Image: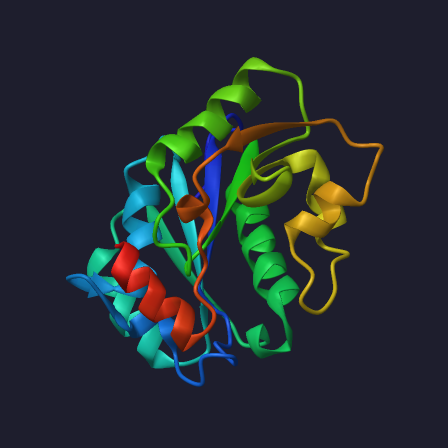
Length: 204
């Protein structure tokens, strides 16, 4: 499958180890749906042309997310996801390169409160301005979701261990980007511990 060169692809990172949780957090109930499905359903409502879902080399995550899959989704396994976030990200990048795209939006499966308008804002800014990336931020700190132009993907392939796109965006003065600030911390809440999960349930 090849996409139009002007298409925007989402890379949905759902292959994390959940090591601090002690169990697969993405399959935990969150309202009426698994935790890992919330940002996925949000992404499907956005202007993204396609979505690459990166899952681990085990069945529980795929089983939890598959009921929400549509024709816009390509699921890929990352057998090395236990080695760190960068491996999942690079797997998604390789798949996106094979599809063809103008840019990709990096999304985390453990951020249940992101809104499709946030994704659309990233896309709109990228299409209207000549920038290499567009980031969301809270308290002057860049946070996912990020939009990365394809010209930066070779740099993403150099990330190691648990390094994510944020390291690229904050540590390189030679790239040109735009930041969209938000004043609602809840939007960026990511769930890594049981305490954070329980707190998110209260906020949800």
